[in-house]
Length: 334
Image (tube, rainbow, N blue to C red):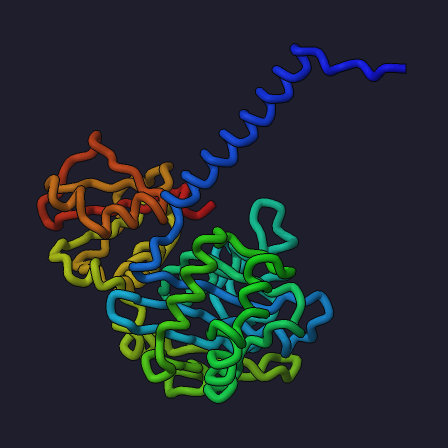
């Protein structure tokens, strides 16, 4: 019995489907390329091991940051028993419980809560997260000697192949694109160990040892001292070289929001000179008022709009005290 040939209509529909899939794939890669980190500017990643078999002491968190323009990097280790301030009304929790706490929050995720905890506590802007679901392939360094070994074993072309494989196809959770993973790997590979600043805040003069009622030993940080120690470590050189002044105004109704956000901007290298409280609440997320076209085109303006979802508001009165006015509204707390 002769097999029937596919009809022309069937072949036409099949080709259209294939063409449509290729078009969607091409569009996605173009979008990903345009919106991915370019490998040339400050980039900061929060990393942690989230193996379900972890004990409390295994939840080591770290911040890896690179500034390619200056050939400098940073590795900040955060001990599992370091107390951090959690936004959204959670108050203070140790590092080892933050991810698990976030996974119980239906409106957010463990990864988002981790990033926000870093920004709220340390005042360091985070760009991405990288979570290892199994602790065997990649052990997050806890000491400077472990970090040196970690750098040698994972950030070289030959010895680093297993690490590259883990980044690309391993059991991880991340919001990094494939292009960002490769650029992140190459950026740290290109740094010598002496070009990377290592800091364990709990083991420095900013660490404050304490004990919980259940006799658990914990650490907290002297944040003022921490800021003075690290104020230059996480700057975006493009922002630092700009000469635009900023005012941050709290219109959210919650105390200290403007001060917390100002810390993030200052760590980036911005020039926040005024922190105020609005007379009336603003229901929006974040609004910006620019005093000139130059401030509108600035690097810090692009960061505020792209990474913090701030939007220009032309309906508000222009303030001449600073080049940029940032208004933090109630939506910022959600």
